[in-house]
Image 1: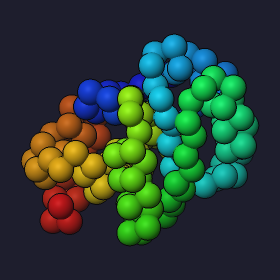
Image 2: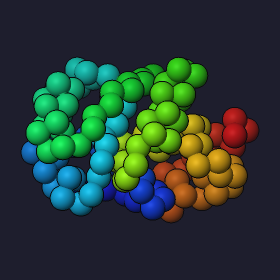
Image 3: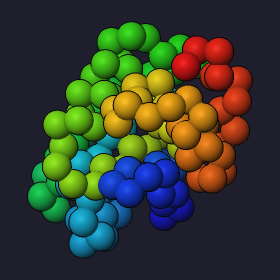
Image 4: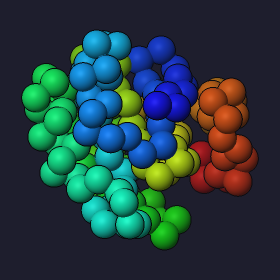
Length: 135
């Protein structure tokens, strides 16, 4: 797994597999957020398989899919809500991690400045400078 810590208690990753959930639980993650629509590409594990593996591992699972470069207000608010209500580390994933870090940056669950959020994304390997005017 390519887990990229963005801030203490929040990380992003490319697509995970059901078999990764026990390791995520052992690393202390309390919740997983999937930002991919089900069936986005061939070979992608079904959301329900990840959800079931998360339940078996004692990790909360949330499905907030976004696609096509669109980040609707409802998805941003749902992401913010999960981040603010989860006590403990959260891992968000999508195909490459970019949608997940973008949602974190837009949702701003910790009330950080635009510069801090863009810097965190860059440190994790994601260039979100194109979002600066929206922050």
